[in-house]
Amino acid sequence: MFRVLVVDDEPAAVEYICSMIEKKCPDLTISATAENGREGLLKFHEYMPDLIISDVKMPIMDGLDMIKAIKDSGEQVPVLLLSGYQEFEYVKTALTYGVADYILKPVTPDGFMAAVVPVIRLLRQNVYEQRKELARSMIMGEDVREEKIRRYFPEQAYYMVVMRENGLPRRFTDTRETELISELEEIMFVYGRDEREALYICPSAAVSGAEFAGYMREERIRKKGSHNFITVVMVEEAVAREKLKDAVSGLYEEMNRSLSIGVTQTILAGMDRDKEELGEKQEARIHEIHGMEVINGLNRYLEKRDYGKLFEELWKMIEKAEAVKYPQLGLERLVRQFASKVQQYFDSSQDVLEEELMLEDAFYEAGTSRELYESLKSILVRYWKKDKESVKLDSPEFIEEIREYVESHLSQELTVSGLCREFNLSQSYLNLIFRKHGMESFNTYLRNARIERAKEIMERNPQMFIKDVAMMVGYKDQFYFSRIFRAVTGMSPSGYPGRQ
Image (cartoon, rainbow, N blue to C red; front, side, top):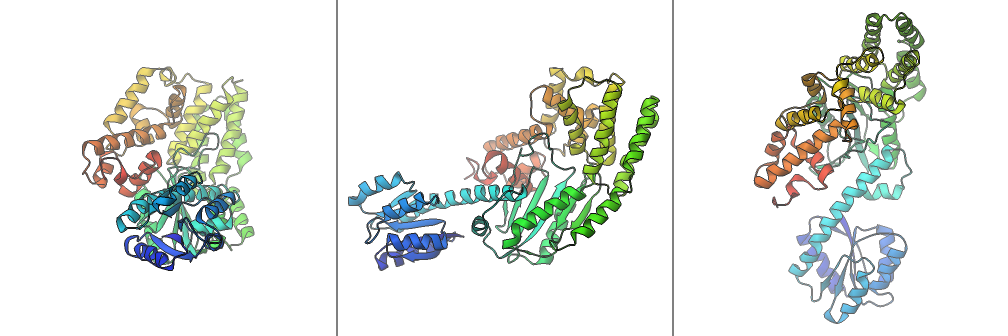
């Protein structure tokens, strides 16, 4: 609910406004009232309301001076002014201070609601944007004011989980293709570094711990397919609001530390767990794979040009990594060491950034260890063998063939790995093809194509249920579809023009 400060020197007017808010505005609640602008200014800084409804002319300090003082302090809050016809010059001045609207006296219920409804819509959009930015800042470890956390996460404690599909976000390219935020039944906030990830934040007052854990189990089952893996990191108990930022940081540290290619796992990341013990367990897992021995073995087969044995050993390393839950970051380090050796051995003139992007794509796209192996193999084999795929890379006809296939299969469960199997491509090559033609990544292209198709369907059939629209563009989960739609278009499917 949004908090309102009502400022008026007439007690009857204050009572009347409060009464209309209580009866007609379920999204609003009265946080405080004041008799003049000076008192209103003090109450504003004490209660930090989301909306101010204020008279213009009052003793001691009028409404305009109060609004100017708030603006000068650097705070932004929408204001509705109560004004008589004879005070319209005041209103024109107030509009330069960023006042949202004015309500003419005598105030009628219709006039009041005509002014308030658009402001409530504005407040909802502002909360959407502010929570998104706040979550982004906490995820990235940036400084966040405690006051801002209290304002946009007003409950006393929260359950928290990070759930990620497949590998860690890209580091060499922008991961913020799509940021998700949603409110499921007004109790669940969902954010992510990209569309493969969700940070669930749920007030503990809204559900029990058992209910939240059950919901997360269902989410993991729903997301888990045959060509992906899911990593879940969760806190054991509800987190107090004042520890929210540290808890988010802890969840992501554990995610980055523990995610292992091809391994579906649930990890507890209690804030008070012994970090030294965690470090020892991590080291024990890492020592299961003797990094330098692996690299030296691969190097020997490289020097002998025994590529069959080389790829056999590469597969054994990746298979062992999955078996011991070897961290993705550690495996990447080994692969990059060997790739660098290959480049030196063949005196490669390949573009360094292109090589890094292809390796990054291989880890980001792989849903299984086998898919990772196939992608790495396709990258390495280019150094000593002309790859049959390379002749297609600069062909607009081939790109158009892929796009036509996508357009005709949007209603199906179309995945990167499935498309690669259809066209006999590796995932790294698919993204390379799109980059060479100046296009966005394939995942971004697929997401945008689905949303564009959804918009076309809703424009033709405005009464169609959202869940049916979602199914027609390849999304089995209505809520996930709504999150993606809103992240891409800035509005929910139900609010799309023509459906209201």
